[in-house]
Image (cartoon, rainbow, N blue to C red; front, side):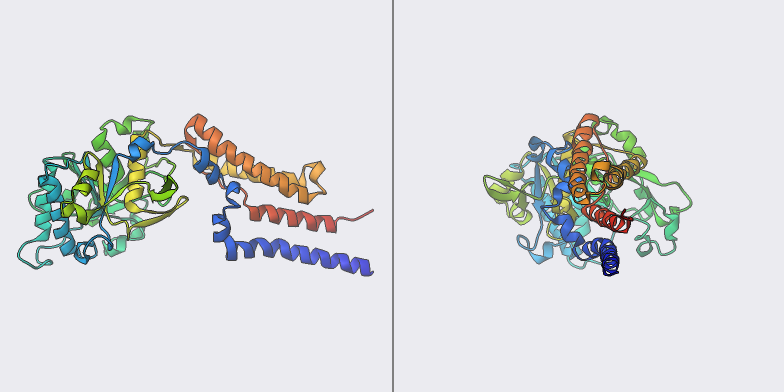
Length: 436
């Protein structure tokens, strides 16, 4: 009787652990477990980052310079949060690039958007918006300038279009009423903004994919609030694509990118971290130069951006969490541009295929504990075999198949918590099984 009672309590304890351990571990330590270096080999992203293709080539990386506006190297008035004085600072900066004969960037990308503000908002002797307009037009006579444009998705549209029902936007975007720096004067009707110019002043959507590994090629946008639900959304290129196309007009004809763009499907790349170690010292992957030093005419700063692709932005406030750690916005845009120019993008596998692979992967792990006779009564050994299978499948899908077919399967493999749950569940069944 005592033995039977003891066995019953064993079942209860293990059953409780089977439910509690995965739940508590995920709720309390989920983020730490995902970031743990020891558990990284159990994630397919680890093997893809280590051995997969899709990384921008180094010669392309060295072509980029980030012209950084930050609290550390620029006055408070230069920051974007002070929109009037910031526009005046940007006008001075771009005039320096236009007037100084010693510096000739290959391309200037402004990773900041400028929504239209009326002329009476900024007080002073001059209108900073008009000063910025003239500076951009002057610089565009020397090189191509690509400027970011804001857009609003279904969750954001209410703040811009009060009369629009969010559900009517769907998966499309609504274009902000941005400053048309390519025109002599700002048009009054936002609908005039819909045809993006293809001259030396270009505009690209700043909107990124929620998955930072995907290069945003384009989004379907409504030109104004009044078009939502009445007219059809039009495809707009993103900032990265517009910039890459300015350097290589044939860029979208490579690897079926034009078809992906038309279907608003975004390819994968392997991101480079914001910082890397060369010579034992950490340094920025994409070299950053102080915008203030360029305004001041510092010869060393001007030399660093000469004959480079210059991305102007505010790295200190524009940050994104990725599998490679936190990456600032200008560096992320540089990643996308460099990957496109390197011709290193990966076609995404169909979501249906991803789900089938994920289910098959889980079925394999399930079979280890419940179908494979040598392990049927050895669940401890089943954990070891499951971990080996998980790493093996991660290498197969994230490295071998990816390299062979230039496609990336974003599968959801069984985690360490699911493997532990199967182990505990099998232990419970073993205790419940009648003994002869």
